[in-house]
Length: 487
Image (tube, rainbow, N blue to C red; front, top):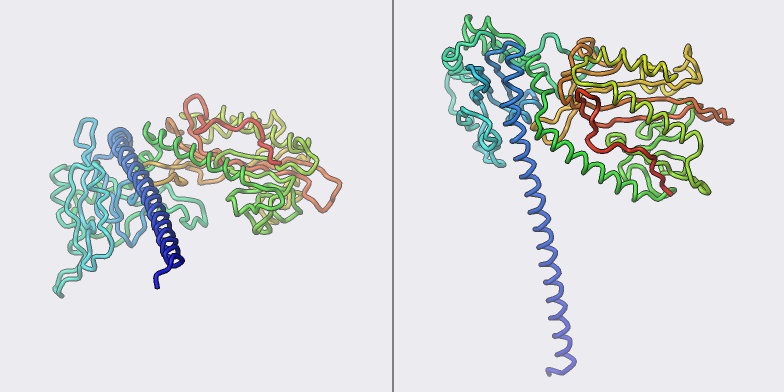
């Protein structure tokens, strides 16, 4: 029998289902809106990177090729040899990319050779970055990847097929190809930066055979033209860097705001800690002995890549203690000297000579090695042997960065490097206008305590991306002047 009680139960159930359905639809709508927003952001970034690529092809590439007396630049890529430069700067992981100076201010850009397209397995979507970029004059169709019925031909027969006719029509006197001769990295370098030595020996043999003796004898390394292309900056590149950096600073501010001393762990908010430790343990909280550390009063929390720092007040403190104030003052002094000394047009060797003199006047000792890179590790008494124990020790490694058309800025070791690390050739490359680099340095300031088991120094590390202009360092975001306090 249908009773009033049953009626209300059915009505309540209907309302509940309606509410749940409404909530689900709202949630799905919000999720779709977020997805659309993310897709729009990704699309905007892709177009900005394409704009950067076009600007670099228009403005930087002609200068780089003319400076190095290169008439044609051939860059060979194969998926089996990871090539971050080709993948992100040029837009592909396979193919033969040819840039030709045919006179005038513009370089002809051609995409030839074995550039892979869709596969017979039909997994994923074909990458159309080359076609979508609007950067190239000549684009040959990509090759469908599918094993054919057996026949006498092998892949080597096709790899550079037709390239000779292309080269003969342009008759270049000097042809740069992606292999290295002089601009290698330091002893024990294991290629963690992604900059490979270049094309394979097999590819080189096949390439020279296709070109014939006349043009094979004109081949030279592309290492210098590639370096000049990477370190050359364009306005849209700097504009995007500032936007990226601003977003990262805002993210770091939120991380600082989320810290609850005695509760929050450094890995939870993705920041680095500096704190006085005992001999043998680094004061930089991303090393051994710091696993999942809780942030405590007396710590310095840091986002060194954004140039952001805060001191965590101890219970009863209303301001940092004298040794922290002194550490902060020392940081501002060091940063100011470097910002005034590092200028476009100077070589790293010249810059090093100037800042060594300035730091000596300030009573700061410039050291070649970083404390955590020598044995025994993180042992300041041993590290400071032979030096004035009451002076601050400073080690500098202001290495290059690169953005270009890449998704995000990366370390660049193919270019000038300011400081004690890096091969000798990196010290004699003049800084280009608007040189993108990391203002990185470590310093160790004597700070004596009555506890003999504690370190008798304080540590500081900066790792901020900046731009070197003819008048000095330009920060991507206004530099922090006052130490942030966390209660």
